[in-house]
Image (cartoon, rainbow, N blue to C red; front, side):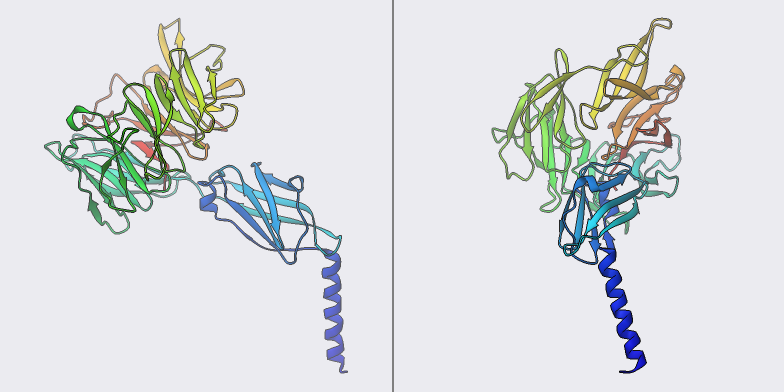
Length: 446
């Protein structure tokens, strides 16, 4: 045997011995960080260099903390996050006391990954005095990065992000409405054929995965709901109620991560309708108001003559709630969005000031019996309008008119707004303002 062969055999034996005594090693890791902020069930897969023994949850540490479950198959350790992750955040996952299936030697796996900043779209209408009159749908990154006009046209009424395209409603000088799908990448526009009786379109929305586009219309002075199956005919079709006829509505909303719409009829009955037609129409109950849906789609906020109720869709369990004191005063409650467990919520509230005889408006975080102001109407001169919460519960977006007395309406027939309207973004956990933009109707889908 040559000396070189002997050395090679010795080295192989040495490395084999080291591997035997050192235990499993982390060979690779895999996670879709873009999906992790949208999907509450995203998985982080850690690949070991050998088959590993069972791992228990108390061996796993995640910073910042996120609820999770853990499982393993052979050499793959799977950590499944049970909530959507935060944007623009670095996560550290550490797993201790990992053992091989074949020997009792422990090792630790550590993996770090970062999610990207949130990117949103909003509508910036032109100044009525502008010569061009071009409105813009603007794409902006909340880290202060990219900001670009992705679509411009005269008299944009509303828009909704639908996957990689934008659904847009516009009106001509005579007030005739049109609905188009626009691909901002190549500028290709597909105008949808509207039923002859549809003279107006409001509340244009798309569901989470972009398979359906839904809007309200008012043919023959009836409030009807229309849906467009974007994977099929792309023909707007009236949504049908329990009796198989077009459903009229007082209010409606889309359930997150589903093809279902919740509709409140003129008699105040509420039903759940599967837009695919696969499941039968499901009665939900009868309430004076349909307010909102929780971020995870499991609960509705409804209202009766006595106040607000959380209604769990799975079992119809009700829980009545009121606003926690803000500045040691019990406020009046407006819009509410449930964002977490134990009725954690963001809500619009008003407090009466006896000294001035006026109400002060706030958007507040109400959690664990305590209320924290996130945004206030500016200097008591302005007003707070609509608000929304990002699907992962990280950000609040609220419209603000800085000075109501000096405000001028854009006089649009749908979603008319002040020409000075601004959307303010607030980090809900810290209460810090992350940015503002001149415009409204912010869409979190990107």
